[in-house]
Length: 561
Image (cartoon, rainbow, N blue to C red; front, side, top):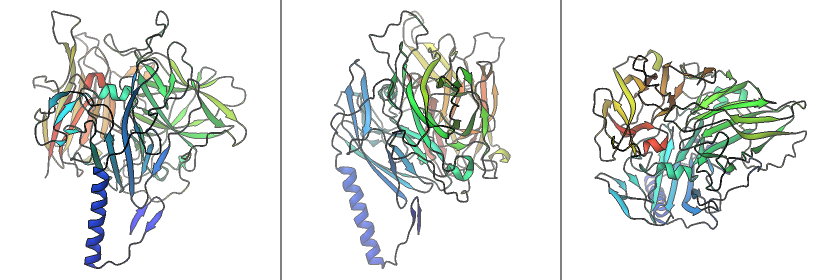
C-alpha cells in the first residue's frame, strides 16, 4: 500500500514469478525512457512582455508515489542578444513546477538539445554521465532537497550531460522531507551562472506545508520565481541607480531603466500564500509589500523549504511577522500577503536596495509587481495549480528534530576570501575561495580531494566568516543547517534576516567585511546535521554563481558510520 497525493494504491498479491516479471518490465521501461532522446520543442524558452499578468508556472504532480518528467534542455538567443536556456516538456511547457510528496520518487529524463561545443576539461573517474566537460554541458541540482548525492540522484560534482545525450535522474525523497518550496537548476561548475541567467530553473514543491502551518490551508498560492539576466545593450545607463543585472518575475522582464512591474491579481479582501524563490544567479533581494509606499506586515510561513519554527519536536510551525525579508540568491521565502483595501492607490511587491560592499554588485530599489484587486473570481488567471490543499493530516516526523540538544562532535571555522589573480594588473580576474581556517585557499576543481571529511551521525558547529569586501552567500548541499547566531547583520535599519536565528536553512548571507583590521569579520554560526542517510561527496559554496564559477566551492566527504 503506497501513500500518494490522490489516495492509496492497493497492490494485489503477486506470485514470485509474476512479481519478477513486473519488476523486469518496469526496469525495461525505465531503461528505454532513459535511453530514448527527448526531442527539441519548437519556439523554446518563451518570454512574456513587460507588464504582463503573473501566472503560476504549469505544474506537474506525482501520482501513486511517482512523478515522471521528460525534459528537453534547450537554448535560443533573444532580441537583445542574450543567450536563453530552459527545460521544455514535450507538450511545450517551460520550467514547470514539480509537486511531490515526502517519500515519493522523482524520475527526470533529460536530453541536452543545446549545440555541441569543444571539450574544456576531463573529469577523473569515477564520473557520472560524460567524462569530459564542454561549454554546453548540463546537469540538474535539486536545490535544498535532502536526497542522496549519488549518481543519478542529486550529484553535481561529476555529473555531466553533453550535447545530444540523454540522462535519467531517479530521486528518492525521504519520508521526513520538510514540506515547502525547493527548486531545480543546472550546476556545472564554470558555466552555472550563464545557465541561470539564461532562465534554466524551476520550482519544486514538497507537499504538506498546511500540516505544519494550518494558516495556509486552502489559500490560493502564487509561485513567484525571480531570476536575473544581463541588461539590454541598448539600455540607457547614464542616470539612476543602475543595477548590475536586470530581473524578471516568472520570466516577465522588469528591465532598467523603465522598470515596468508585472501585475499580480488578488481578490478584494483576500489573503494569498506567496511562495517566492530567488532563482537569480547573482542578485540579492530584500522583498517588501508596500501600500502607497508604506511597508506592510507579511507573515512568514517557511524559509528554504522548512516551515518556520517547526523543527523543535512539536511538529507545528509558528508564523513570523516581518515588514521585509532578505532573500539571498537561491534562497526561498513563503509568506501570507493580504490584498490592499480599496483606499490604496498603489500596492506593490518591491525589492529594496542592498548595500553589498565596495566590491559588490548593485542591487537597488526596484518594483517586482503591482497588485490589482478584483471583486469577483473572474480574474482570468486560469492556472492549473492555484491553491494549497484544504486537507490536513498528522505531520510526519520532521528531519533535523532534536538537533538543538544533540551532542556536538566537532567545531570548524571556514571563511570566504577573494584576491586578484595578478596583483600587478588591477584589471585581472578575481579568484574566489572558501577555505577551512588553517588550510591553504584552493580554487574549486571537480578533481580536488575533499576539503572536509566527517562521518554519518556527526553534529558539527561551523563559524562561516566573510573576509572579503562584498557579500557572500553560504549554501550547503544535501542537508539544512540550524542558524545559531549572526554577527554584524544589519541593513535598511534592521536585521537583514529577521526570524532566522534558530531556523533551519540551506542558504544564508554573510555580509561584507569593511577591511578595518580592528573590526571582527562578519560571520554566522550554524549547526550541521549529518545524522541522516546521506553519505558520499557533495559540496558547499557561495551561491552568487559568478563567485562559485570562479572557484568559491569545496567538497565535503561524509563517510558511513
